[in-house]
Image (cartoon, rainbow, N blue to C red; front, side):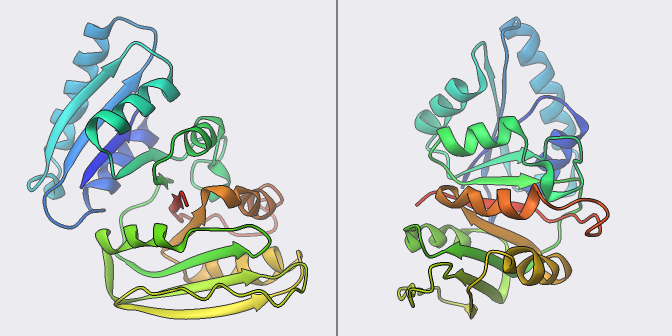
Length: 247
């Protein structure tokens, strides 16, 4: 795989990069990108230092690395890198005030997700755990391309990983998505009918059992409903990475 690591040289960005080293099968190429209006030489030196640090990680031995300094804004730089390097996956650290909570889908992350057509893995402050149970909420009022889920077969899921699909039929239309076909995935499906079920049923179970939450970029309103209304009082702090797919 060709993986693009976006970094602002923060501790959160480095943790996301460490996490990403475990997030592919086999040898992968990691492109480490920083975009700013600063001197390209200075940016390049900082990227080299980060790569040198990453190469000391045990999981780095099978991978190769390349730095991508850009004197440009983040979106333009990311778009160029995705096109030129044929990127399969973008990895970012969680941003926002609470970087250990999935609420940390901050401004830069949302901009990348909405404006760059490439899967994005958002990593909070957590250690890598093999993905054994994935939770996928889908709002049936909006179309999605299930083929985008094929990316999961390139990622470090456990054998016979569980994929829990929560289909929200808020119009009570009886609609269903019929073309789920993912080899080696144990599929579980639930249909819910009330908006309140986002917080009352989906979130408590996902927070307790999931290793990863999967969202579609066209359905980020789901994350807004879930995350913007969750306070530290209402739920425990958690460390769930989020994979956002286009399709």
